[in-house]
Length: 215
Image (cartoon, rainbow, N blue to C red; front, side):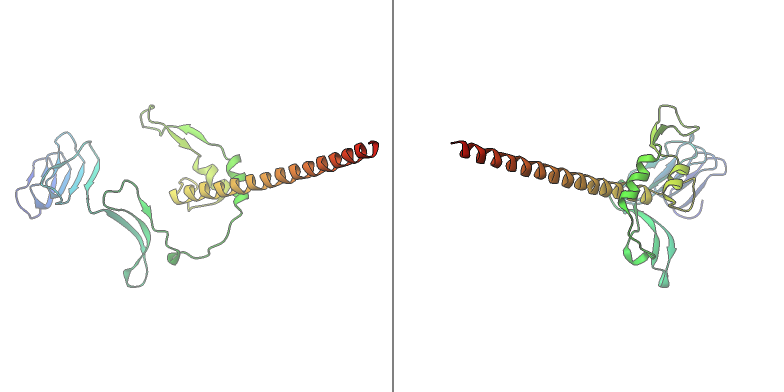
């Protein structure tokens, strides 16, 4: 145990680090903060709890990583002058998804893209349903293979991973490309309808003129 009060580290080689009333009953586990608890049946688990509520925050699986952070969390992966973050992700209080830093001020080499080309490449890219090896067969996902995504768009730093920023960007660009395609098709259709209407009106006027001559 490393400081704090009211702790219990009963698992073999378990650690409790500071805070108050933390317990690490799982072997090789870690508990820290306020009322973090690792169950005996969860060896290798890491649990950290903030002080937002006087209630235990408990592990739920062996070899798991659990954090109660009601004020949000962030991972900074790059900094600029003065330590200002220039890359990273965060999740805010009461939020359920990560937000990636996407400020224009931290970007360079900004270029416009051909959204029609993105749409064409997306339409040609295989999309599959699959399960991860080692996961339960009933847990299914849908999406492209990272190799196909990289070959189609050349985005990211690895052909084995897909960044959510790139996946979202491709989807948004494809939507714009599809909208542009539909607008072009609608414009062509309107032009054809107007041409046919004009031709019909011309024939109708010619017919009416012949009828008037016969009268």
